[in-house]
Figure (tube, rainbow over the protein chains, first blue to last red):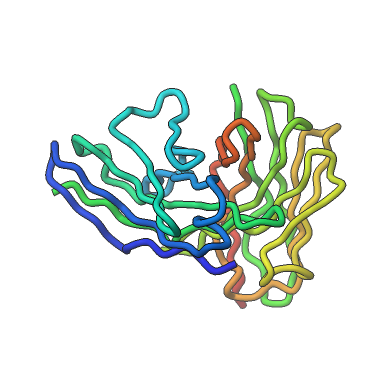
Length: 110
Length: 119
């Protein structure tokens, strides 16, 4: 049950794209297609952005997309907007009804 | 409106106990696994525990098994976290979250309740 590895920070200018990685192991990210991503503003609860690697709940803009290759999942934010400045967390099912989160990435819109 | 509201946080001395509650509204509580996730100040999210829909089985992060107990009362649409032998490192905001089989993810979160363990 080790935390997934995310870069502490990422940044991009408005209208640009930025990708945040999330590295796990062959026992979690690499084995299951149950990777999800959450957006969190300071002092607020997390919000589900992406589930099952690449699917978006209704209401989430299609600027947010997810993918996975091997033990690494990625979240891409296209057409960056000022409101995208937030913390982003990945999560993966780790088997035996347990879950693991990443350490979080602070996204700055320059 | 679908919502989760946590309560029960506060200041507790090291070695003490605290029971958190989470009240659900706007959905069929007994249809969903429920979870506690915590976030230490300035830190990332940590999955703490989950409980099956009928409360028959519960699951914990290895580091907390034995000190924390998750439970639920479907008649009251409520989720609980009993925390014993609290340590300074348990200081965090504790969120309850709904897990949905539709998404295999946590789709509804409460606003969180702060637990501070300090003398």
